[in-house]
Length: 134
Image (cartoon, rainbow, N blue to C red):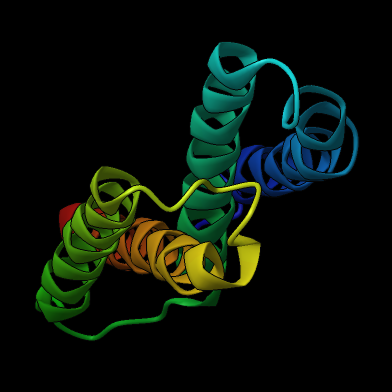
């Protein structure tokens, strides 16, 4: 990574970490039991912050000599979609998320792993493209 872009990516990393912590430690516990719409918006903000966090990590730790493939992003998209479908299927069967929280933990982890893989892969790819352009 060139020295002129490193501070911007470090600021992105710190900001995404702060937003992810704020969302997951303050907003979600506040909204989750009583306000499902606000909790859903907080979850989407949490997913976006985790994606940006992993994007910044991918940019900072990448030193590719050639263009990396996007296989991990494909796996992340598949994991994200599969986890969403499983969570929606559990909801369609009638399992309330409040009553069966451990059952919903696996799809939730899958969603977070999926967005993390997507962000990390795009960060690696972006850094490789920037190195090729230079």
